[in-house]
Figure 1 (cartoon, rainbow, N blue to C red):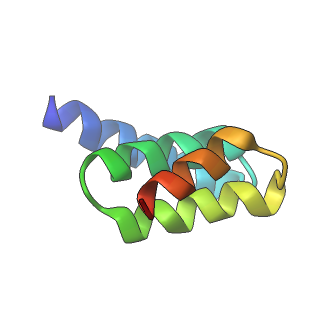
Figure 2 (figure 1 turned 135 degrees about the horizontal axis):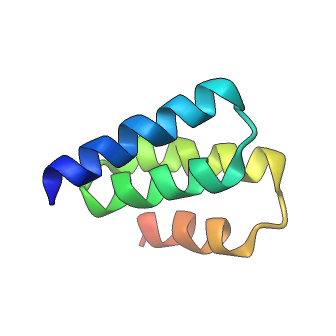
Length: 68
């Protein structure tokens, strides 16, 4: 399972290098990082989603959940 998560994180980061505003990839990467306990990194990616999509309710929810 961990190898699949590592592969997914690598692919999300590759997609974000090609398109830094790819909110779905940023959100997926943030979710993955949050699940691993990397909350500071997850927060950065949730905030990246919100910069391009300020009305993204799931990103706001997940960001708030990190600070609970």
